[in-house]
Length: 114
Length: 134
Image (cartoon, rainbow over all chains, first blue to last red; front, side, top):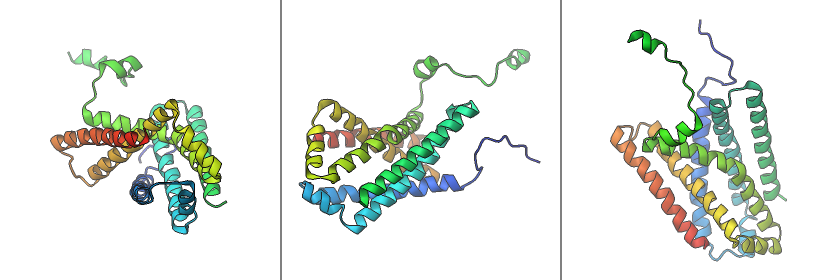
């Protein structure tokens, strides 16, 4: 019988894999964003507004923000598990990070679809 | 001698000055800790800042122009430069880690070379984008 300390981890592949897949999504988006910005010079308000009026730009950006939130959660949890030893403080910080990332998601969606 | 080594206190927790000034990380270690630090900075404050910039610039023409003139302030430019570096370093180091995951470049020499490449490429990208910003 394996005795495991309860540390709030999943002991699994899921987070590890999710972090890498979301990383790839964000890397592709970054490359795409650089190309789009370089091919739409100069970026005026009209150009900028028109870009974010397009469905695929909104969809891709939303996908980026969702990926970011998921990716950042795995990373932030790793950092907190490594450096913050008191359980109560770590839990409080983890809740803070979740709320922060949920806030980012909601703010991002409102920017894109208002 | 065996009893002497048995008396060592384990685990050993390092003081902050020891971490900062006594222990010299190998270059792959430096890339790794900078990956963590840049990741933490990107979550807070830079992601929030990016959302604020996107929000204001898309809200109205005056908002867009306000962001344009705001980004000319020296302190803001410095912040943007740090943001750009954190993003570039996190991206480059992340690509390196993905390659290590599929066991590409895990030998000592390629691993050291790729960490130097990550440091230099991310600084070069920051310089190029920073030059465009200025």
